[in-house]
Length: 87
Image (tube, rainbow, N blue to C red; front, side, top):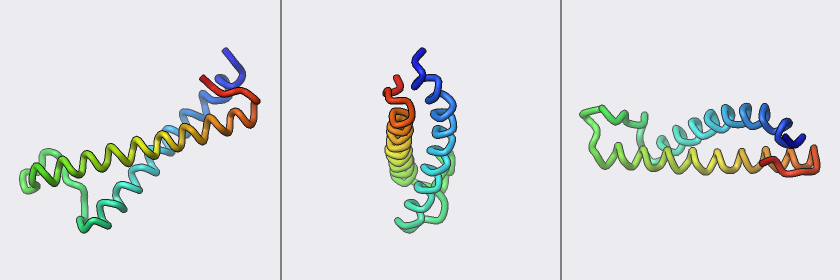
């Protein structure tokens, strides 16, 4: 196991939690900006299929983008620290 991998493991776990929190906050703010209070639950019978599916797609996209950005930043930081890219 490379030094960069050893260094990245705890950083990656921490960044994973942080990215989830950041993505959740970003999604809630985005959902409010498009004119809704709370994102619908899939089982909320008062919400339309369209609203539920748009919400889920938007949430998934935001989570994927935030996760990729945070993971990339973490790997870049580990490379600066150790001189090698974590696998």
